[in-house]
Length: 240
Image (cartoon, rainbow, N blue to C red; front, top):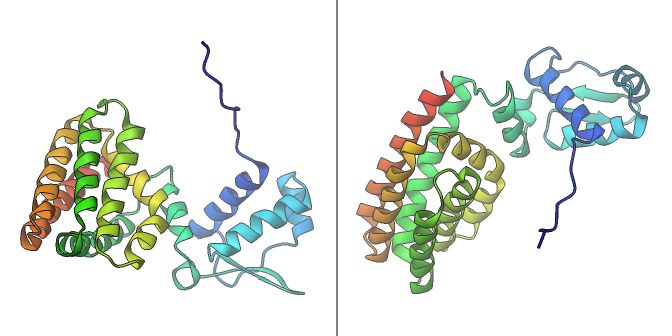
């Protein structure tokens, strides 16, 4: 039986315009405080309709890159002051995923603080059901084919998300979900080297054992080792 095929998707005109605006602002070609041309003029320059430009600007404004002001138009923001979490994915994708060193350092430093706290609290507060779910996720990771990077990336995210849920702090899983696209982009790069996969799975297995025993100190130690390994590999990949 022939499986049902998914519709072929292409980038929408709005998404293309969003990417164009993001590149101009992130690259510095458009400066903070600079007023953009009117939506009508932008539509003519880009060869699209005015509603498409408007939708793209609304998307860019939601990320904090511009402010849309009545009777004035769209003005470029300093994204370091006005940017939202939604902008992080655009920054990661800028230059086709080649991260600026300072941005990479910031993301990795933030992850160390967040993930080690998750490991400690998960060991402290996890339920028996959550401990079982973590063991099941590790088995799924071990069963996944090493060349299925998409599946491994999703399972890895679900593993860390379950850790966040097990902390019993409702804010932590919400925060991690906010970073999902950024997180999985970086993890996908990481898993592009098949040799790292067995090492990650070994760290995950040790982490599950520590959390199962409710050993907070060991959980933090294992998580720190996992993150140090990931940081080293990611920097090697990105700086090539």
